[in-house]
Amino acid sequence: MTRTFRHVVALVWRAAPRTAGLSPLLALTAGLTPVVTAWLTKLAIDDLVAGAPARPLLGLAAALVAVAVTAALVPHCGEYLRVTLGRTVGAHSLDRLFTAVGRFSGLARFEDPAFQDRLRLAQQATATSSQLVDDAQQALRGLLTVAGFAGSLVALNPVMAGVVALAAVPTVAAELSLARQRADLMWRVGPVERREAFYAQLLGGTAAAKEIRLFGFGGWLRDRMLAERRDADRAKRVMDARDARTQSVLSGAAALVAGGGLVWALLAVRAGGLTVGDLSMFVAAVAGVQAALSGVISQYAGIHHQLLLFTHYLDVVTAGPDLPEPDRPCAVPPLRDGIELRDVWFRYSDEHPWVLRGVNLHIPHGTAVALVGLNGAGKSTLVKLLCRFYDPTAGTVYWDGVDIRRFRPEDLRARLGAVFQDYVTYDLTARENIAVGDLGALADDERITGAARLAGVHDVLRGLPRGYDTLLTRMFFDHADKADADTGVVLSGGQWQRLALARAFLRERPDLVMLDEPSAGLDAEAEHELHRRIRRHRGRHTSLLISHRLAAVRDADLIVVLADGVVAELGAHPALVARGGQYARLFALQASGYREEAA
Image (cartoon, rainbow, N blue to C red; front, side, top):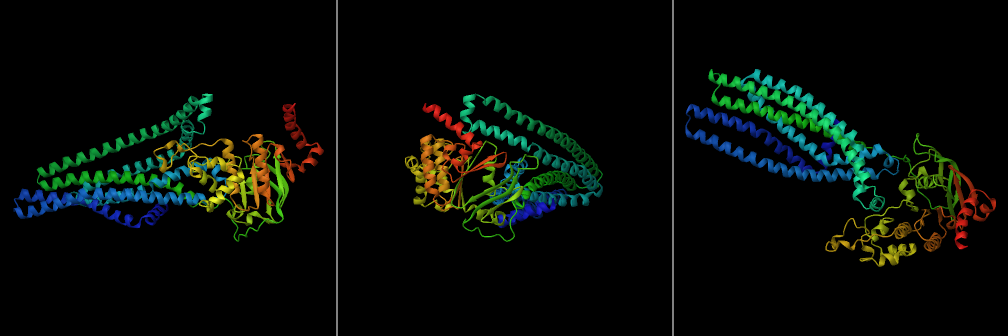
């Protein structure tokens, strides 16, 4: 916990050194003002009882006014600094968190539910990092108040001071235990709350709105969402009941100690052992010690809880690379010979089945290679390996004879272009949706429109209300269109597919272009035109095309048939058809449908 707290302090200091430096001074002032007020009040009462002249009383009154003004101003200044510090540190820690996430070059962590839960808690920690330091300052303030009043109690009656101190020991132990239980509860209910958020997003978003209304399963999703909420609430309710019982016992014990002390003080004043001023000081000291000590204990427990939460943040930002990085990375040369997969085996974890089982494949430079096979044959997984989103479990992928693990992933990917089967439709403008393929072209109209023309979507985008600067979403609106929020446009599936293809075409002269089902949402005429454009764009570059429509791949230089994770057949279309194997059977099945329609 101490090491984690040092990380938090360093984070806050880097984010806002000036504000972080002023806050402890205010905490110091706020912690001492109650003690100073109590002592000034005691002195004033004693002077009044003793019949002191007016001048000293006026001096004490002026001092009390000055302290009261200070006590009134400090909370407002402190609140301003707290809010300012919270915003600054929150933005800084969020930036640091997602900078770390951006360094994960593979996909394994993003597909791990435990990592998703940890990332969610880490995001919560970014919002509480400044609160943690603020609680530490408040605890420091409380400790100063406790120290001041405890010293006053020792001066009045050391035995009573010891009783008050001993009464605080079980409170500290109980609060720390509760803090650990709360942190454990957050980790346990994290997956439940994430599923609840998932159902809520389905019910309130656009992605599933059509199917929910067509098939009428919104109530089923709502019941599941509420079931997850009830599970989380049930666990929290148990924790709240335990918290309430513990706090009630502790508060009752504190009240008994305070009541006993008050009885003793009254009897001592009656016997002449204490003055009336001493009585006021004693009452203020006991109340001040208990209140400040309760605050310190509560804040310490909160700090402990937040530090446990912040460990998830540190786990993410200090995590090492998810893929091995070469000590001396090689420069990625332009592809000249080709890409080779040599005895490549792959599975997503030890508990998962093998997806690829000893694949051997050479993709010659300048050729168009088609990858076909049934669902689950490993086609998309092979693309992930070529992009180095994963490393093979066994075997090697070579780029012109060099193991791609000797390259930095970002250098390798700079030479690739791809359209994935699950391409993303960003809630951005049309221009930005294309430009994410190469942000250097964001302001280059010629490159943006050229890629759109090549993908056959230029006329569609040009005809939008604001052309290429039209938002392709109804979820948000552009600030320039606040008066007319309906200017956002939702493209059809086929139009989005062409736009995703333009995103890949934007990257100039990639050595390898991978197209995973690039025409799945297109009609036959549009598909034919699209593949004509792809062949024209490909030129002499190497391309890998994945498609279930075998008519789209028949012109490929090399067709690779994957089955059960291995290369089952290899060759050009005429040779594979003549062989009469799996490819010929699949091609005949698809062709028979067209022949029946023609007849």
